[in-house]
Amino acid sequence: MNTASDVLDLGPVVPVVVLEDAEHAVPTAQALLRGGISTIEVTLRTPAALSAIERIAAEVPEVVVGAGTITERGQAQRAAKAGARYLVTPGFTETLLDEVDDTGLPSLPGVSTVSEALRLAERGARALKFFPAEPSGGVPALKAFAGPLPELRFCPTGGITPDNASSYLALPNVGCVGGSWLCPRDLLAAGEWEQVETMARQAAQLG
Ligand SMILES: O=C(O)C(=O)C[C@H](O)[C@H](O)COP(=O)(O)O
Image (tube, rainbow, N blue to C red; front, side, top):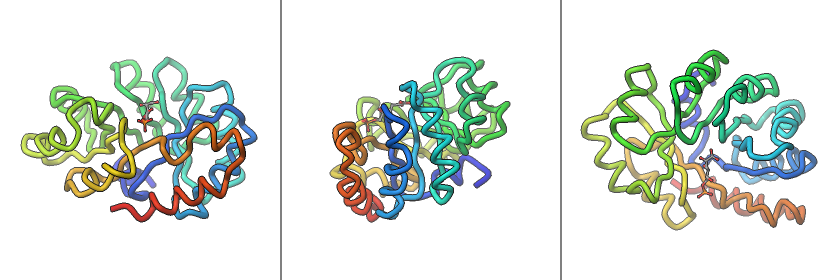
């Protein structure tokens, strides 16, 4: 997996996961894997996130672990050091993009407008996160992006559900969708790994 476009090809759904407890990292990744999902985006929203990334990278190498919610200076470097294999940002600043690029890792920077997508295309990006997908116009917006931006592919995230995922995945400029629905906090807190596996299995079949 070398490019951002490769990240979009890891499967139809990238689970976006908030891990409050690093102890949940390995069982979550294993449950996703049993369900047929081979990637996990661990959001850097909790103190446990970097340790969670480290554990998944070390103990569940079959799952390609990425780091999400990169919003502050230093986070890209720390995530790379912990073993993240790709980086995701909800939006971008030039500083953030430079830091992400410095890691050498593939990344999906977040955009919600054509102008933002153009700025990233100027920097060489070919794969982007579309965030927040539903509030930013959803499927019709992405359909419209394909006209002026034919070379760009997207991972829409934000408001994606099992009910609307397929309509995004049917668009030629969508490689995969991102979503938190597979790994809700209450299931992780309760250690309901079989339920995570079941939802992963359903998500893996979307397309
Ligand atoms: O943390 C980030 O970097 C984000 O961009 C936000 C996440 O992608 C969304 O929270 C996922 O959206 P939902 O599936 O609607 O929960």
